[in-house]
Image 1 (spheres, rainbow, N blue to C red):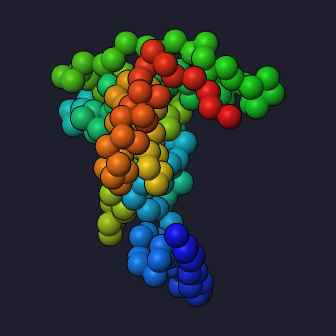
Image 2 (cartoon, helix red, strand yellow):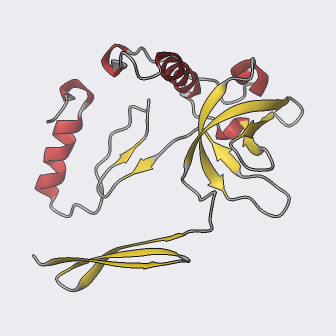
Amino acid sequence: MNKELIINAIPQGVEIALLEDKKLVELHSEKSDARFAVGDLYLGKVKKLIPGLNAAFVDVGFEKDAFLHYTDLSPYVKSLLKFTNMCMQDKGEAGLDFGKFTIEPEIVKTGKINEVLGGKPHILVQILKEPIAAKGPRLSCELSLPGRFVVLTPFNDIVAVSRKIHSSEERKDYRRLLKPSSRRILA
């Protein structure tokens, strides 16, 4: 299989195309003026809790605070807060052993924002919607990190195999490897 990577870099941004046997397989484009793009991750600081809206305003570096509604919190947000806090305290000195990390219980779907984000902690968030006019970005704590054949969703037990893998035998092999009972670090 013949693979080509074509990169078009101009002052307005970058476009990257992956061709396999002269057929377009992937296309990525990034504008240089887009500071807050959908999917970007930020370490934010909760600034204001609005119990009436069941939401919080989070400082992620934009001139307006970003909006985080309770429904956009991950069920695993307590684990995310705990891990973020551990990382900030560690400061990269000793390193964290994720194997020894214990998952916190899930939050209830009908809970209150001040019960989860009371104390105004630092929180890892992902941009759901870019800023518009006078509004800041819309955020989520339901993190997803997409790759070519895998999407990593931290603290989530769901294991799925990409539909881009067409061979059913290969998909079965990946499912077997990714079962929670057989997870191991692959070098």
